[in-house]
Image (cartoon, rainbow, N blue to C red; front, side, top):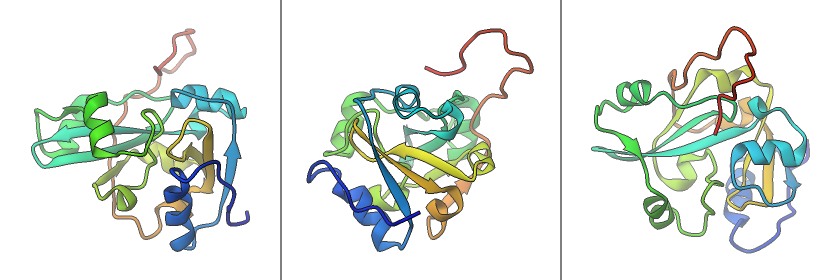
Length: 175
């Protein structure tokens, strides 16, 4: 995997520059506009489980990132335990836009050190050799080895998602 250098505008360069500065090898994937991590998976032709969904949480301690496979749903009871706040909640779109100007809604990268917030990672993420995540805009994703992505990142590994069903009953576990 070569260190990525391609980009599509000045705004999204922060993610690539952050990874480059940390010496993380990555590939840039340009794709049609995707508004959700599930749309992103479809746009680039990978399984939803290989795409990271970054969810912003508001708690008494401030904002935090919850990083889970796109195929899974966040379990708010687990989030409450992880952040130590029974009143933690999903951030509103306005709060996300205000906190992370320049990053598109639905395209927040899983990089707590870049965004200066704590990051919590579901252990299911670590089951993948490589993952894909939004690079801050809706038309660009990053593919990276999972091990490389989290080296040097201060992340908390904690169960954040519901258990997937044992059988495929046709119901989607994602939004």
